[in-house]
Image (cartoon, rainbow, N blue to C red; front, side, top):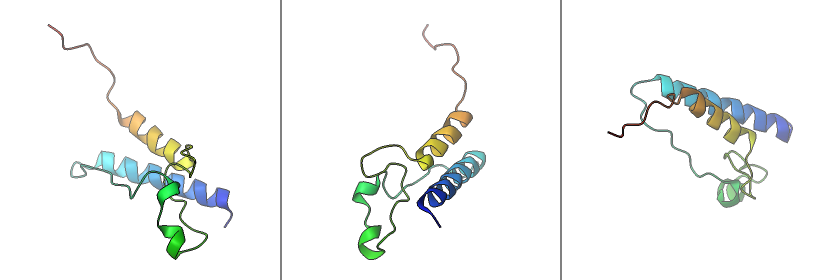
Length: 85
């Protein structure tokens, strides 16, 4: 599988898992094992792998970041009036 295909596949997984968590009343958190590929331990043990986090080694946004962000923004409540007296 090509790197672009893997990235798109992972992005779809990030989006769907985020949607499922937001829809489930008992899901209170999303936990990632990091946020950038720069510090991933996976390539040490599985050469050629380890690009599953939302930001690349240069902290640039990847498709996973965009899909995660999209799902969170879609679920965010609309801004309401301020609560100042």
